[in-house]
Length: 92
Image (cartoon, rainbow, N blue to C red; front, top):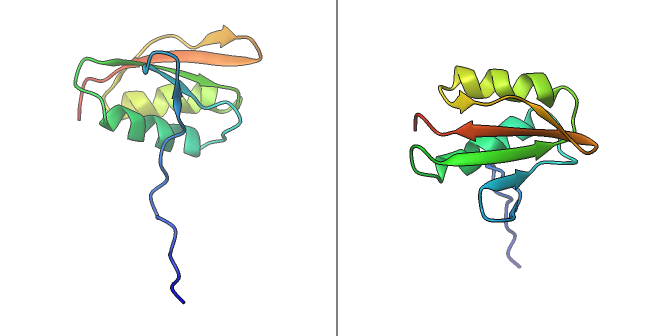
């Protein structure tokens, strides 16, 4: 009988739309940043990723954490029952 251990690194939620949109609705901090970072790490420099989320603290925490990491962060915009944020990858 074999057992498997779960991966210690979470994989980002599936992207929706054209591949530049990451749906984080239903996720909470700090996972919103972890998932965004994992998704950005897969993209080339200069690529844009739109994040959609509904966890209120993420409206402050995501831009702050992404900026501290060296990424270009756009404005947080209201998007239905949540928010939308576009980030451009500027550093690996």
